[in-house]
Amino acid sequence: MPIQQRVRIAVVNNFFPPRVGGSAHVADTLSKYYADQGHEVLVLTAAYKGAPAEEVREGVRIVRLPSWTLPESKLSFSFDITFALRWGNRKRVFGLLDEFRPDVVHQHGQFFDLTWQTGLWARRERGPTLLTMHTRLQSPGPLSHLFFKFLDAAVVRPILSLIRPTSVVAIDTVFHRYIKRRYGIPEHRIEQVPIGAELDRFGFLDKAAERARLRERFDTGPGPLIASLGHVIPVRDRVTLVEALPDVLLAHPDTKVLVVGRVYYTRFLERAEELSVRHAIICTGPLPKSDVPGVLAGSDMEIHDLQGFGIGIASLEAMASGTPTVMAERPDYFPGTTLASGAETLLVQPGDPAELAEAIVRLASDPELAADIGETGRKWVCNNLDMPLVCAANLAILRRLHENRSVTSASGDRHRGRDRRPVRRP
Image (cartoon, rainbow, N blue to C red; front, side):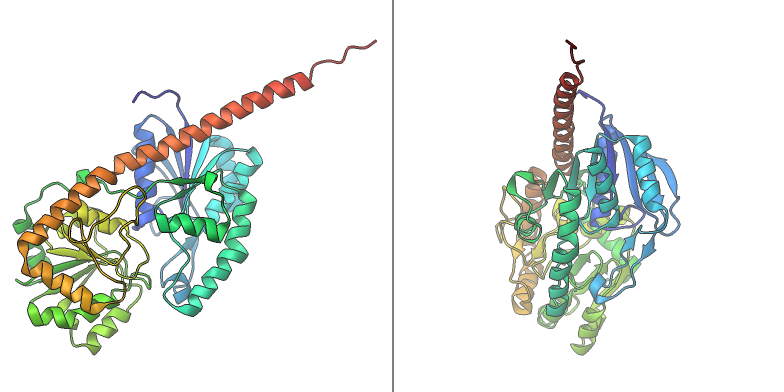
């Protein structure tokens, strides 16, 4: 589609590559898409390890601000959450935005300080903002859950009321209700745009060759191989998967689970020792993004979304690769489409090891069923959650917000022009 007007877009997220993670991946992909479509893009993010303070990559200017990391604890999901609340950063953020003069700001994460700082700038300038929320403040622990509810009510909601994002993106049906209930944002300001998968990364790889590479690299053995992608945190703790393993190993003694990602929460390993199944678990640590297609192609199934806290990008990538998945989630999780258990995936109840073990054994024992579910899941992702479609939907919202502001500004200028007409003296 031809570009009607070049738009200056500021993309804001505390998480951004080289840091790995779902929202970092989404912000990176969107930024490159906006630039590819001919728009001018500035990314504001928090410094991370040895990444340069400023760089231009694939047409995107990236500025990383000095940051500090929240100590790992249960309240931070045992996750290294990075903030840019440091002396001088607010002035720097305002200065960068004053220089860039974005037509619209696309923020990621409702509880990140860079969202709040850029929101204050946009409010001062009366500029439009689009806020995409990626994480619900929830926890499986009752005390932590109560604390997160308090944090939402006492901190996040008042700040969102202050900065007042023009529109907010709900990435799924559960998040839609969460946004309305926790933050009091009305329906007319909520956009429904799901997360997506980059299907062009997941071509038809040689599964036998990829399996051989995994066997050589990680000693996965000859039995069924379960890939479990994503960082291990309390809301994706892998405990139910471990508790299903005794029954799985009775049917398929050589089964292995390949956990790909950083381990922030170790309860699943402790539980594996208690159940004497630790030998069946291989932890790879974080792997490069380029390794993920091969891991999925070489595995018999992918399982990690098991606690009812949502379907993440890793599950969509597994489906995009044609690898069958097992998930503990509702069939209408994504707006406008449904997942049918036994067709696109196998759906189980959260926290039910026996049902999960039955699903795993079913896939491992019936290669034809596994292949059918993998292919049906791949087609479902292609038809509903292809990343270029998701990027285009986000860009359409940004363009609309910019155009609405332009119309409003022009109308205001006309009114101000009438107000400034000279008064005729008698």
